[in-house]
Amino acid sequence: MRPARLGGKVALITGSAGGIGGATAALFEAEGARLALTDLDAASLAPFVERGALTLSQDVTDEARWREVIDAVLKRHGQLDVVVNNAAMAIVGNIENTTLADWRKTQAVNSESVFLGCREAVRAMKGRGGSIVNISSVAGVIGDAQSVDYCARKGYRIRCNSVHPSFTRTAMVEGFIATARNPKRVREGLAAAAPLGRMGEASEVAAAILYLASDESAFTTGAEIVVDGGLTAQ
Image (tube, rainbow, N blue to C red):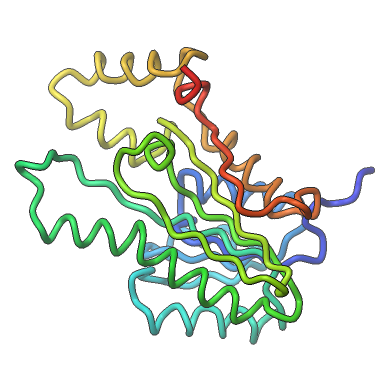
């Protein structure tokens, strides 16, 4: 039997009630990690509680809550080895009909929370080392939408990498499809956007996150791993 890839490690995953976060939590659990899972909808994390995970409600835009969450993890486990900044949101709209309030909310969730997560992760990991994985998007590679800040501290042995999925079958993407005038046409278009001819699965993105969280990527930092079925390679 092969050793667990995350045996002995404590991993915090935000936005873990479903989609990529949920798939990552399940994969990390299977690979031996002790889990700390957060989401606005913490009740959805109940199955993980029954298996020993620490679950917490968290608004990732709340600076004070970040400190409380990290402290709770350290109190429970005495260490923190992996932080996956996964929580995200999307608002359907263009420059003409998107409100400033919508813009600010999206930036707070998708960008500012990553800064807060990285800062608190460094506080908990320095002196021990660890891995930070920021979930972005292919939009951050091809210059559409926003990118997330990258920070890694020389000498702290903390690796920081990002994963950039394209259209993945998650509740967020399904919700976008459902609001379209012609959902069937939009679904087919999203699948056709990638040379592999389909949308991605959350489990496929989780596999890339697992690599970055594990010691197999011990010499990988500052990297952008694209999981997009070839979309950006066209």
